[in-house]
Length: 351
Ligand code: FES
Ligand SMILES: [Fe+2]
Image (cartoon, rainbow, N blue to C red; front, side, top):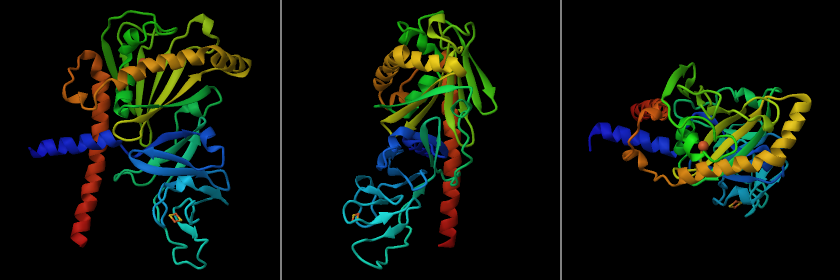
């Protein structure tokens, strides 16, 4: 195998497992309201989350420092997590705070587990998974729709049996709506032919149809900032769908492992006051089911794609957004490996 192929495979494998160095949503806030621990696998890592005494979400490896049982099977005690097996208790920094079966045990005070930064916005919990080049969490700056009073948002999370890369590709491909969603309530309009154009943005790019705007899902903005990667798209709404202009989706794809992911998105509308109330009612009563139906169409299609489809794809002009997005991921992957290799070299020198 050529050296360049080795590098390409290394980068591709890393991207498939999950590009690190971003805040990524991992649960809805409601899922952590119960006082119970919550297990999550993110980018192949088994993690446990819970709320500490101040209500802040904490996250450490889901591994008891004593003999490795899953901490997520235990319970929350005084803001810490206690293993069910022998009661060893760990705090949100991954430090053993109590070994109840053995007074003055030497394990107490030992930092035993990796901990992860968490933050909340828009009804969801975000976690920072560090990369070699970005070991410290950058400032948590979620998409504006999640924090502004102007927007009403519904957080939604679903698990799809395919790589997160397919969800990102899907978002960077507005043209699919005219085919895959042709029978749906909001996506049945407009022309079935077009060319696509791509505009660079300060953080990422916008991909849009050349001859159609404001008719169907006609554009996607892909954002890759220092600490966040997500997409934003608008779906024009017919008059019967209430106040507030287009229906906006802000979406993330969070890898569980190479083969599965959480598709995480917010359904947003720019409505305030009484209009906000009527929109929330309309959404819950009539529109939510239809939206899940549309999403099932995406899921069916993406789950049908083999993991290694990239090796045989034949892209055409409409895939310029897909290509650009992949280039951006490769760039971030290379930054990670550059830092990793520098650390390895420094380690060897000092050894
Ligand atoms: S394995 Fe967790 S307390 Fe023993
Ligand atoms: Fe879709």
